[in-house]
Image (cartoon, rainbow, N blue to C red):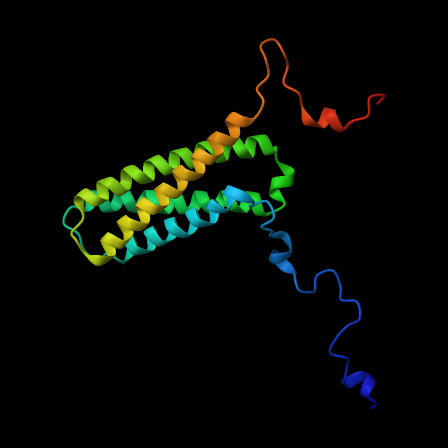
Length: 182
């Protein structure tokens, strides 16, 4: 037996399409669309996850309504942040209308920020002064502040967009790239 059957080269000159430094799910994930204030999405995700984890560590409570409401809202905030990040960072963004993604993100961010702020206030009024509850409340307030800051940046960006005048149809961008004689 020569070396041909038993031993092979450990590196390939031209690896196949499913191999290389970015293969599998990593090949579909990119942070290139998270420019500027959109990086707040990562902060929102991390803070809402930390609020949820700290709240889950709480072992006992006397007034549990605020805790349960905060649990639901912080988990929902984390999942909605994860969903928006998946849309922005994967090829899904290329398959949907960017205006609808921005509109959904606008209202989801506003709603999540306000409800998380209310849940944090309610939990702050009903907690038992344990360190994990206080940490969850702090992370909840910070996450709601991040959501509302992100919303204010989106609102400012939305106000800067040119609005169509009365009687004018909005200009669609795909018409701007088509040749005139098509």
